Amino acid sequence: MSEAAAAVAPSIRVAIEDLLTEFSSRVDEGRGATVHELFVESGRIETPQFVLAGRDAIRTRFTERAKDSSRRTRHYWSNPRFSGNEREITVVTNVMTIVSVEGSPTMVTGGSSTDVVVAELGGWAFRSRRLDVAFEGTLGSSAARP
Image 1 (spheres, rainbow, N blue to C red):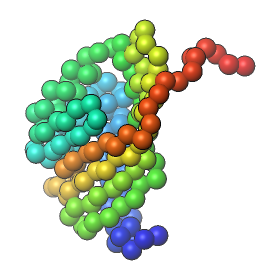
Image 2 (cartoon, rainbow, N blue to C red):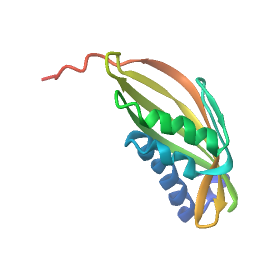
Image 3 (tube, rainbow, N blue to C red):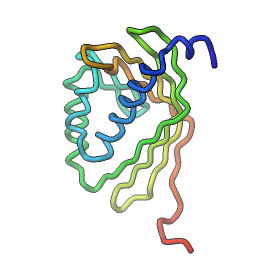
Image 4 (cartoon, one colour):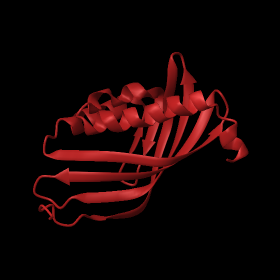
């Protein structure tokens, strides 16, 4: 384990992992209208498709997205690498997102997410999330396999 990762206490690591999982759960389970609650007021999300600056922009984007019942997603993260101190942590994870939209091929995107989280009263919040895409493509047929 690197010195930077060792410097982040296990209890802090678990709390941040819970934050990462909560983001995915809210988006994937149709609770996108609450995603902004996981960010500081000046929070930021950067992806190749869009940049959102501030909780209001995050709220608007994910509220609209949650209304689209034809779109289903699953977000996965793994292999977290932590650095920072007890007030601000950077965590880099491997990520994969699967997107299914009625009438379109199922898409898969993989890459890495660099998240900066800060200690807030009562827990941790995202300051920023940045997605760097390594690959994108479509999945094969969804027909049942033997």
